[in-house]
Image (cartoon, rainbow over all chains, first blue to last red; front, side, top):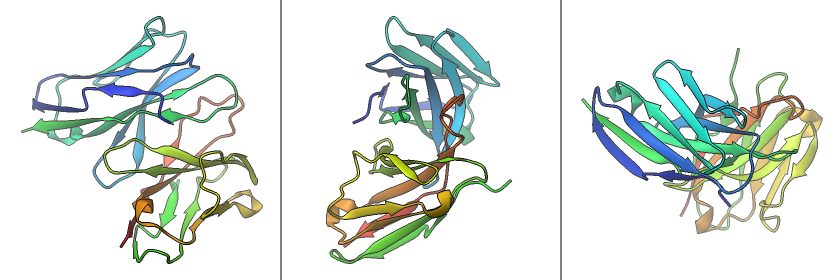
Length: 111
Length: 116
């Protein structure tokens, strides 16, 4: 079963706007990761945030983590048409457990 | 450096036929995963290997699915016989061993299976 739940399921924005996606999860985690998947392709790792971190940046990406609310958000600033993809959050729990993915948010960036 | 390689990329078969998918992970990655991704959903773990050992196969439908990772390198996932509900994308991923690892996964392009 999938632990993460992304919100919204789909998002459509204009090029240049910011896109925000949210992820909620259920159990304590070691870290939370965000992946992107272009249509018909495999998933690509974007960014990882550890449970003791609250915010992290990578280029146009900003991730926040609120462990008290068991939630995370991914912000893509100044979006581009090439950002059109599905975005998944994935959680890694403590111990020798595998990464568990959410159902994803489908982002469409219109030029 | 080569990424995770999967084959075939696409496979169309009739129900009750067998099918096999192959995966070659990134060199040096001890952990290998097979995920299944249904349309519009996130990947769901089928099996995870640490070297040659299957350490998590609780979600693998063992009546028709089998997997192996001989010599702790490449892996094969087999379905026999296939059912209509097996239509999905089968993703292989690899990572460094879980100890001291952040758990970041490197995915292949996937094998899209269509069962008619």
